[in-house]
Image (cartoon, rainbow, N blue to C red; front, side, top):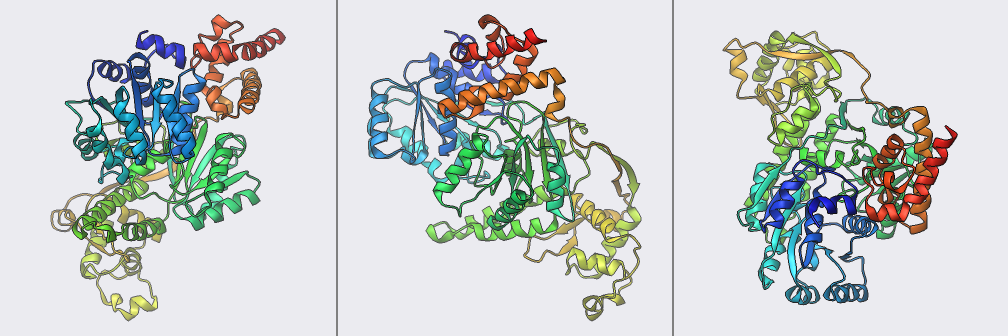
Length: 606
């Protein structure tokens, strides 16, 4: 069979997405590949389809149990023989899986990196016919990535133990140029095809809010989403606990997830979320990588993440089915201090890690945090900011983020900038942002007077509000006129461009908001007509019943986007049902009758 035939037969799609066909073709030609593709772009098909064409087994190295379980369940539902081997299985179950693998029962075997060099797995691998080794979430191999996993460093050793080197394919959604170079080098990819399809996710709406009360802002955001599923990310376990309790008291079905919970509770809560028995998961970043839940309609970051890579990966868990989804970040200055503390305390150099490397990695993390802070304070297009970070050259106005949907006027803040920069200089670059603002506004606080800051010529020379001065100073930091240090108590210093304003007479322009338009895309319920909405709910009911019978997540049966295509095409027989996007031959044979019957009855009543 051809790749396109397999695409339709097993996965239900009539055409490839951008980059998929090229990577599949090169893999089948025996080339190593590195695919950088955004979440929801179909990375898994790039290695799953070749595995069904080539002889032998494809090993897929994956970092999380949940990722393996979801992908293997989805493959089996589509009629593909697959299995996984990880710590969730007993030794007896692992032995049985390896015995089945030796007998040729599987085309794909997902394996945790920690198991690669175990005696039983090595014994199997050294005698098996392995046609391809796929490294999923490949950024985990790089110390300069945002999610380094030491266990990934074992992959090259494993490859050397194999009697014949298979084709090696590597995939990730988020990787800077440095991380891409690391992946290629550390995995020893042989003249690989490197494809970056782009990081754009046009169905995602991005917004940064700076509320005085984060929980009130969260409730306001959720007020029209009673039937939608989402994730609320928090930076600490304590915040997870607090937000989860408050959401449940506000009438939402919310669950918690963080590393301090017992394994059994984390497992049960994750299952309840995946199986749609709960609406909201409140979690630290311990939750989510590899969660292949397609109908997540929103991701709220209650606190700012530590870097753009983490943010885009976590936010990208929304809208995997291509439907419109919301990604909202609730920002406060305290988030920066919390992340700085986490950076300072995250690394343990007690295991032979040299102190110089530790300091380099901490400085890298601080630099990434600065980029993340700039994202939260910029008035420019949020999508453009993210895409530029990953090396793209996007349009400057996406019309689908909070900043682009806000009307701005360009203001000349040169005079204010001169006053601020002069004040920082006269304060000997020794104080934080709040003290600079207090001095500029002529505060009579005990601390200002005790330090003699009221004697400076810049004392009381600004009439702007605290909010306005803070916004202007953030803009000056973003543009390089000021620097905010990464210390526990950050200090404001003059940046490399300060002289352009103080001596060079440079003009400083800044976008200021005038008014806010409706800031969110249409609700999913508004994307279909009233009658289509009724049919969609009927089809959801059929899907839920089938999922419960088989004890699998509903999205594994069919995604929301496939149900919506059924509403659009109204298939009333098996042939028409096969033309629905996302319906493959196996699923059509298995489920077609139930869905077609409901659609035919609905059409007949209409």
